Length: 293
Image (cartoon, rainbow, N blue to C red; front, side, top):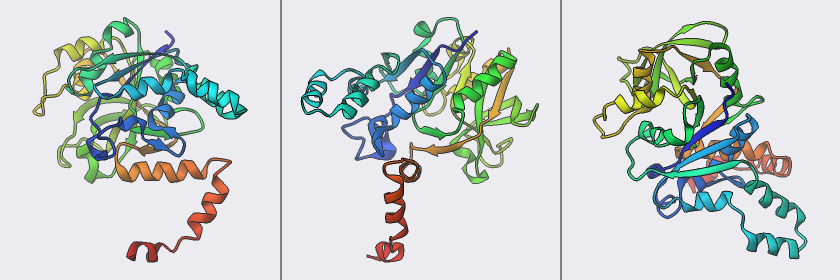
């Protein structure tokens, strides 16, 4: 069955970006000239997704406004003869069919996914986390779709992380099947270094079978009062196989400040209009002088 729908959880409070995220959604912070969430939506569209379900919360209306039409702005651009900018604005509103569900309480990633149950229905679907921007020749989601089409099971994107950082991620115990494809043996949510079965972390791209919703219904709240998707996957794993794909590409953790800055610099360097001038600027910086001033 073709993967037609994608869920993008975007209801978090963005505390790692305070005070910038106090009055605007973290997902709307710009990387170069586009908000974080637009990169994720564009990846979904480029992968063949036909409908996106965005899980929002209070104070997230700017996300809806961004992907809606802004007739006043379009009229202004048209009157000023700004054809390029006008086309860009119209393209955003035509990207894909998007619907929104409000998560009334921040009860974890698993709970956010569960709220999409009625709209997803009984078909496999994708989940893309806005914190992860992945630059790749073939989209990360397409790479997962290829694995799903072969095994017809849930597929997780994984990435090696330093051992000292395993406590920040869901970690998998895996058995190698092919060059970059693994069968999941076990999953652990944010283990200590000693408890971690590996240093392969689940990164923010998933293809999930609809049975994940039953598993999430059974998943207990953790110590922080949240339903974790990794724990739901652990229950699902008892009933059906789960695979993992070590994707090819560069991943930026735009959910934390250093990753956000790395993404901004590297994506700017890749832009045709900015790359050359920005490269000259960076090469000309006296970094030691700036850091000491």
